[in-house]
Amino acid sequence: GGCKLGQDHTRWCGRRLAPAALAAPTEAPAATRAISALASASVGLSGAARWISEDAPAGHPAHSAVPTDADWASRKKEIRFKIPGEKAKSMRFQEFRVSVEKAHRSAEDAYRIARLCYWRFGEGDSHSQVTRMRDALFARCAATPPPPLAGAANLDGGAGVDPAAGRGKRESNLQAKGAESPPAPVVAAKMARVADADAAAGAAVQRGERRSEAVQGQVEERQEQMNESRKEKKTKKTKKKKKKKRSSEAEKARWEKKKQKHVAEGMRKAQKSATLESSGKWDTVGVDIARAFLATTSKEET
Image 1 (cartoon, rainbow, N blue to C red):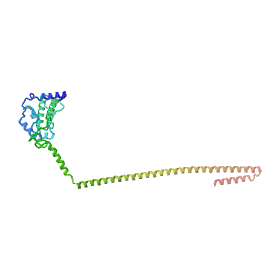
Image 2 (image 1 turned 90 degrees about the horizontal axis):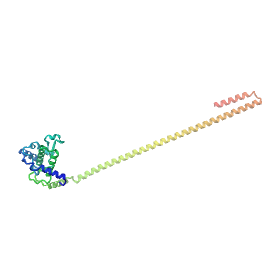
Image 3 (image 1 turned 45 degrees about the horizontal axis):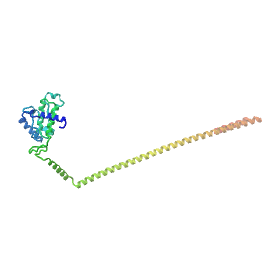
Image 4 (image 1 turned 135 degrees about the vertical axis):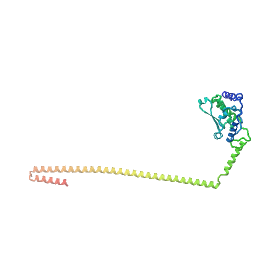
């Protein structure tokens, strides 16, 4: 309430909830009270109004329009009703909700808040105005802790249970849980099984690593063999080329030598024929030339 917005909101809520505005009788019909009591008892919440004394006027349609479904309240922990009036058709939300939890777990207070909201909708208030009034009533419910009620049901279904008792109950539950823990031999056996499983898993991992290393070694060895084979083939091919080159050169030199020899022999024969011609021995020149030609031909054929 220190800011201006909070002060305005407080004044507005005070005007809306003023006794003059709620001068109508606050007592709800007997049927409504009976249904509310039944719902509160079945939900397991407090059945008497603690903070909200206001209610919709007696005989107002809010008492019948606001549902008192005990099963719904127990499951959803809230009260719903359709917004009345023609203005509801233009509103974003066609349904209004009142939480039982925010009413400090008081079902009767939640029902009263719901009936008040329904009444204000019927009076023409907007959705935001009714929402602010509902939140102000929730704040009133949560302002102080609930008073101890001897016979009022709570969330655990007990009567007048001290909140501190819950802490003791939790501690006792923890102690009981600790007492129910398995004995040491069972734990040791379980730990041994876990250790065996870990060892087996580690051995499997090591076997996989060794297998992968062996496969990698085989791959590397095969790669080296392929490299050696390629290198050897290349060397052989190079040697073959060199040998072929040398053989061709030797053959060429042999034919060159034979050609030179043939030319020299022809020149010698020509010189011999010229000598015979100059000496006048024509009778034997033809015979000598024929013999030389035959000898040369026979050598070439051989």
